[in-house]
Length: 348
Image 1 (spheres, rainbow, N blue to C red):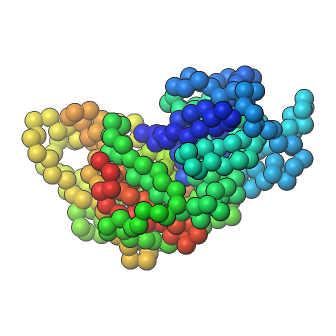
Image 2: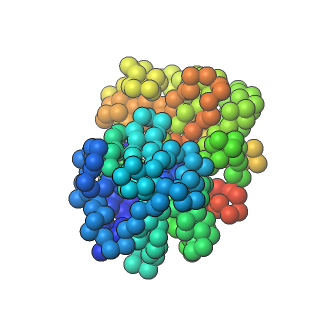
Image 3: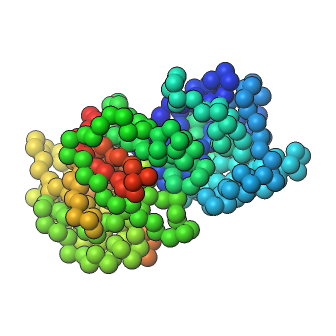
């Protein structure tokens, strides 16, 4: 499930639907004339030649070389000496184009001149009709950092449980704290992964009982929270223990075939009421976050549901708390304060 928000770019402003991604930094959209290739998107593709506020950046500028700190390749355009970027994601999707300045509009009163973004001329991947990505990571080129003077690196969202429901993405701390909000400290995995929002996950409970996994399994690889990843990935040892505990709690139901990377699936045909063990994340500072049912069972069809977690190949890769596990939770990022908070049942 991609999480889409609508923003506007250019002068006059053109509305664009972007996937918002806390796991990457660069905001980009597809741009005409699509020198390489552009995938099919729902709105007209942005045309920088029709905007009075668009400006390419020089490849010799400090701003261009700043891309490397976000792990993004950059080089000079042979034709114009402008800054070219290339960003690739974990699933192989990519965007290549001009790194540029443009007027960026969030609301009628929240307008940012000279916003740094990628004007993608060659874009391929699973972007599901969106116009591109909204980068909410921790690097200087992210939306969070570029708007820090106005919003003080504070934003929150609630991801809805279904595609027909509506959630929100809110910048700034103007709405007060939701009921039951609990904060856990942000961590940094490594210098190479410094754009990610690391969290100190130390354990998981199933049905109120701690899964038997040493906290070092989590701490040695680290864990990030990422709105752009769908299914949560755990270290192999942790996932195996979670899966076994969940299967034990669901032994009265009929297991069925796997679905994609989900290996613990059930056929609920004929079951009027289904009970399931709750799952909660435990963090090193004593914070516990209970998942909504939509973050536990992934509905493949009206009768088939799967445990909405997957394992990494081994214990060395970092874990990822994906967007399915964040559904219906209010997730609050106080980046300046070095913490992320969770509150239950904040959107439908």
